[in-house]
Amino acid sequence: MDIKKQTIFLVDDNIDILEIGENILSSVYDTITLSSGACVFYMLKKVIPDLILLDVDMPEMDGYEVMRQLKAGSETAQIPIILLGDGDYDEIEQKGLSLGAIDYITKPFSPSLLLKRIEVHLLVEMQRVSLQYISNNLEMIVDEKTKTITELKNIFLSTMANLVEHRDEAIGGHIERTQKYLKILMDAMRKYEVYQEVMAFVDEELALQSSQLHDLGKISISDSILLKPGKLNPEEFEEIKKHTTFGGKIISRIISQTPDSDFLQYAKTFAETHHEKWDGSGYPKGLMGQEIPLFGRLMAIADVYDALVTDRPYKMAFPHGEAVEIIEEGSGTHFDPALVDLFLKVHTEFEAVAK
Image 1 (spheres, rainbow, N blue to C red):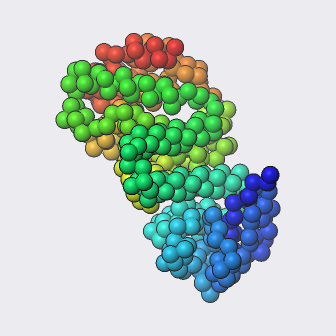
Image 2: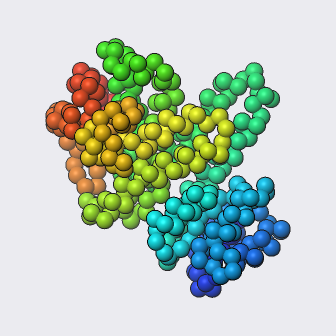
Image 3: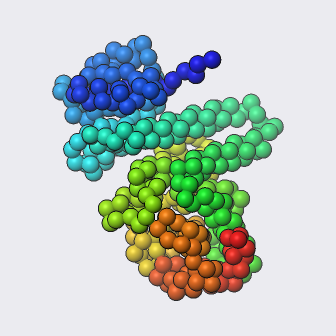
């Protein structure tokens, strides 16, 4: 039995782009090419697509105006839209996102990157619809609400986490290990009464589950960079740093469009802040000290420790003792000194997990 392909509208006034795009997409998706905004609204009377690739610069009705009209329609407001363009990246991305676009891809586009971005956003849309369905039917499952919702949240988190690890096989087991390192640190925080005024309001189990999405943004990084068997050059490193903001955007979109998604706030914090540094030299925002959310500071230690003690394409694993020294030396610069002190009390438990 044939599985029905998902439908994509490719909208561009450039015939060459339509032909190239159709050649790339048609083997995976039911692709409908359209040369103008007017054609989009005509075709919508017959077909509602799963996603629209929309050129920004078109005569008569540009991509922004098409978006405004789509977002104003009750049947079309939720269709994911990825903008296409060859102008100023920041300006188009900012304007497009403010109107409701989910992403922006420059032309000419890389076939692998185009397919990967579409795959990611269609998966996110499926998860959003699933969460919406759950929220709309909560009254029907009152008796099993707590158990069912918890299981679904965990399934959602683990599914997205698995997607990340399958893309980056070089870090196999990283997500599971960092989750265990966080548990060790959080247990130590309770034992030694560190940051208890913050932890008193935290659902620790849900926070640990959500930590699985800290590298979610890597699904938007091209394979040539993510899977490069060697050290990244400066330009490639700048690109991979964007996984923090990509992850935050993906999670923010689900949060904004799905009721009862507060649990994803933990995931958003992990994704956006685990590369911030105590002295303000981290990324993406250069936060300093306790401006960095506690979960970001915790994940910084777990993430760096795991990177140090495991083989990566660009280095061999460090011995546990050397990794401990590096983290201790980073106290007050890279890491929260109070959390480094905790780490030094429990580092042998980290070693046991790493082994």
